[in-house]
Image: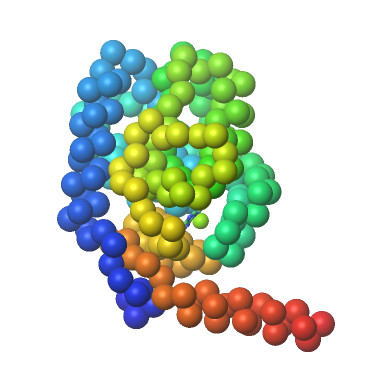
Length: 191
Ligand code: IMP
Ligand code: MG
């Protein structure tokens, strides 16, 4: 698995530092609020698990899952709810927790949907931000760090459902997905 990584962008220690900083800020900002953290599955689970333990005030958690990517590396534009929230949002100060904000299309859809359920407030926290690739009008209220326009994996982020369990974040060697693309096109030309 490690052999498919071109270079490490953030070590385990660096990620822990970023998470601590955001956790402290959120604990301060939400101390008189009714915090509900909503994790967008699956990429944000690792971040969510660490972030909630870096938060020192009471909070609730919930999960939702939408599909936007399939197995490729670019947003398809198609967003579908796979799993909805369990909790009624009335009275909660919602914090949507994302792994990475790329085009922003996924998140803008999710925000519109959650807004219609009348929470007290709604904000966005993303570990990684790729602002160069933004097409939707969206800004994160909390962003761990900016990343270059490269496909990254690890610490929850996947390529084709793999690499989520890497404890660090790295850039995937392009030949890994170029090879997969070649396979897809040669398979489809056989039909
Ligand atoms: P958006 O709708 O383009 O903002 O897509 C956001 C989602 O795409 C994220 O929650 C990730 O699941 C996925 N994604 C975007 N960039 C990357 C990346 O560099 N590595 C892994 N997944 C990514
Ligand atoms: Mg993904």
